[in-house]
Length: 284
Length: 157
Image 1 (tube, each protein chain N blue to C red):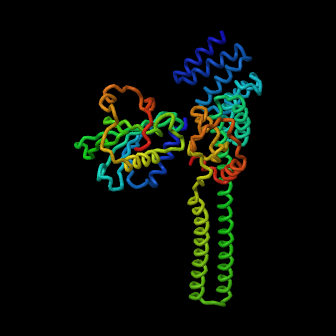
Image 2 (cartoon, chains in turn yellow, red):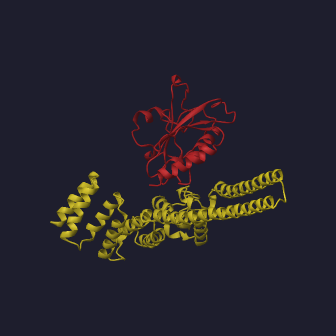
Image 3 (cartoon, rainbow over the protein chains, first blue to last red):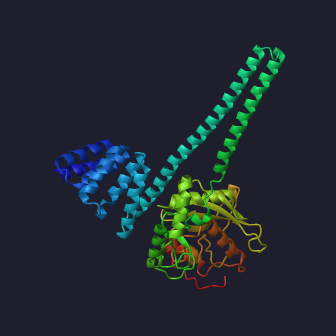
């Protein structure tokens, strides 16, 4: 009975009717809340509907039912990480996806590629959040400095007004001084804004990923670099695919096996360090 | 999987800079591109000629090679293109070059590097002839380019 509901849900999912599919999966779950596939199918359906909080719930339920270390649950880890990204919780998404990625490599699971992508995506979101805060802080700094300049000119103008009232200066002198003070303040603020503008623009211009962090197969920044016996590093997934297919090194064409690949931890740290400060590089 | 992203990156790079004698003709989708190549030295076989290459990519690119061949364009298109004369190029444009076969391909190759390899393959040639069995090959071959088992025995060309 519950299986039939699931089958109907799958059918609607394939046809692109996600709300309809969600309904059937929910009914299936009501009949039998112990079947992990019902939850994982509803999770991917809800991803299509962008119901992130519900995806998180379903993915966690599926993982719990499968058992945390069950390789079959890796797909649900992938859904969970996507949900966490959707919920703007990139750090959690990163942790879930990284751990699942390691597990998928150990079990040669097909999810490696998806998980690797989510890890990078999460790193990007973590960076974006920090970057927004930084720009806000930068603008705040600019704002407070501008406020200081303004307070300064207001005080000077009040003083000038006082001198006029006490008869220390005449109307003409007052007018000229007032104008000079205002112009001076305006110049200061313009200079400040220019300085901040140059500072932020300079950063935008430097948006180049160094070649040594780029994987020669995918042309993307590396996430899990490994080094071949010929001394060149590639991202693990692409080079593994190629070596499994060809059995040779892509540069020297010398026979090589995937067991000859070694982690390049130093390069991995370099990529991580770069991404921490340049999250945009994920989309480069 | 990687294919679309990798190709869009190759395109960005080539739009910034392409080596001399190479021009992007058509790249409006990520399945088929066309490139023009010119031979830059004074080899009389290819003097003042431009040749058109067609690249077809599968979604397994760059793990698997693209299919690359020369194509003809009639003069009516305004850019007449012929198939260059070469002992490793059949008269239907199919190229016998090890790096384009499944066994010789490497994923570190790019559209640009393939074009450059073909430029140098033409530059180095001085034989005004087609491969042996050309007519028979073009009449009977129905296989995909990368599945053809060429014998790369001739290292002199």
